[in-house]
Amino acid sequence: MRYAQGGGLTDAERAARERIRLQAVERFADGQKNQQIAAELRVSVRSVERWRRAWRECGEAGLLSKGSPGRTRLSEAQFARLERELERGPLVHGWADQRWTLARIKTLIGRLFHVSYTVEGTWQLLKRHGWSLQQPARRAIERDDEAVEVWKKETWPRVRASRRSAGPGSSSRTRPGSR
Image (tube, rainbow, N blue to C red):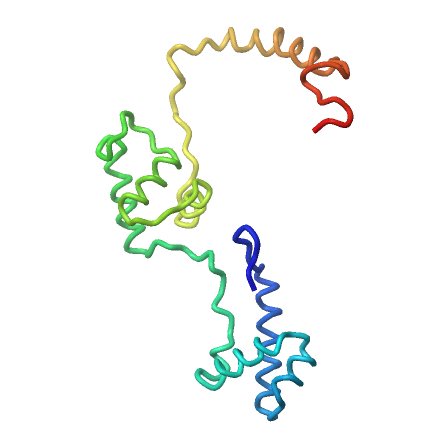
């Protein structure tokens, strides 16, 4: 079965499908015909034929779930190398400053291992290995804390109030019936 937009099965759905395949194994052992098994389990005859072939070749193990396709694509050795490269710093890898961002780490993984991760996938990979979010300890030299407080107390309430009072003809809202 194919899934739209690359979707797949949840762990629960995968387990339910596996239970159906294992019920088919019991029926194979009893000598039931493919058509009868398909009707009882409410699956296609073609699926039962495929399952029977896998059962003949590999036994019950051939019908067990292979697990989530979302497993990690970097081995422990590769991740250890990634950590060493991260310790060397961004400058060594061609970036102009000393900040590692998820996008930069994603790019580094692609360069080193020819494996593509999303930014979110990169974050999940790092979290799985005990990394945590780091924020710069220093503030910008140009930052004026007093000006920020004045803006928050005086300017922001006016901006927020004007957005709330915007009428139906305002550009910040859509007209009824339009999308």
